[in-house]
Length: 225
Image (cartoon, rainbow, N blue to C red; front, side, top):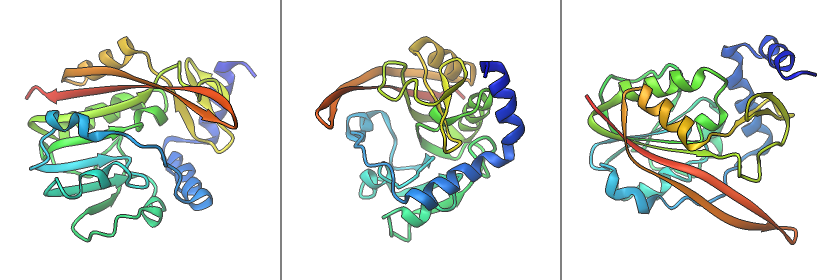
């Protein structure tokens, strides 16, 4: 099926409000599923963890768990209510909100730090702008956001049906989107955020005796309000 027709078919099957259902199904069927490690400590100098901290797309909580003893007020938000059933974080002081990053049920200019790892990776075409605008709205003046996305050099690229450029639909109805550096910078800056740092994280991993490339972009950006 041609890419454009594939996208139209998928949109009819999955209207915007239904996309969270795919994530609920994913966590219900797979349970805890994000086991990779992200070294958040190397970016802590850029983040204000003494204020209100939000992790978007918190999933299993493997990012938020790294700062439990460093941040004074953490909120985890995920579109899938079932993700909180797999989250090992039991600290009652950590807020847990079921919400859509495209329309955050949160106050304006409230968070000193927002962590957004791979939410944009799974955004439908056009939704990335909504997510970034909401992050810009929720960031306190001088606040900082950290983003991570995969690049086309990552081993996951090309798996599934390509429904838009560099965007693939897999059999579980989840979208995987891959960004180049210029594209990501442009999107973030158009949302009114100022980029402070951008870097490529690349490493080789071995599965079943075969080496694979993992590559992502990490961006630290601040509110300009």
